[in-house]
Image 1: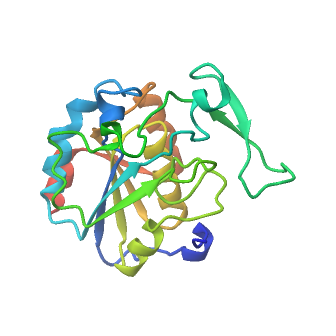
Image 2: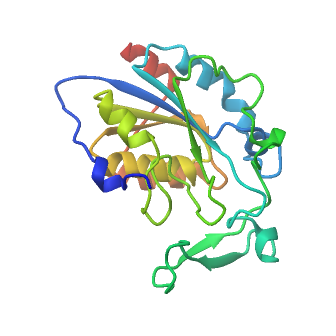
Image 3: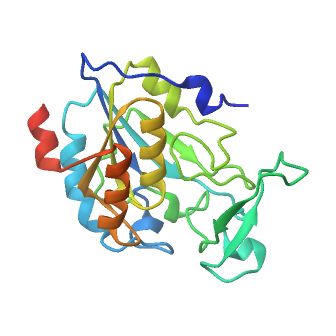
Length: 228
């Protein structure tokens, strides 16, 4: 069993700058496939520009689901985009249910939908963090599942490299990017969204304003390039 997120918490130093770039879920199904985010292809060039910068760490995430994943409407025989209360598989008494949007089947292991989108510069990624591999566990954040029971490799990777600043790009701004940024902030990292390298399902301005109020910083590809 993986560490929980609280076990790997850290506080970034304000006296140094050790930046990590995290590219969230730039996969075929989220760009042109079954759960395509509007304008998803439009951010590939900006992401590649950022990948070419000398970040200390360059990490990507991928959804990698089994065929009957708990997040799929088909798994429950319900309509796409309807909702259902789901429970962690270890929660046998069903004490902590969370409302889940039921998605179209997407990013299934062994299909082209889970592959990185063509044109994305993947050669510089030092690590690829996988999410949603357990059929009964949903994960939006790159750090942990939605119940905060199990952490991914990301918290320890950032801590081991003494990262201070985490820059998020990718898809979708109102789901996986959003919850990843919130978790980074909770861990004490200076947390950045690169707004012209993120696309959302809903109104991105509303999402970014919410995150700004939480203390997450919003920037652009051009401004990030000036830092280096």
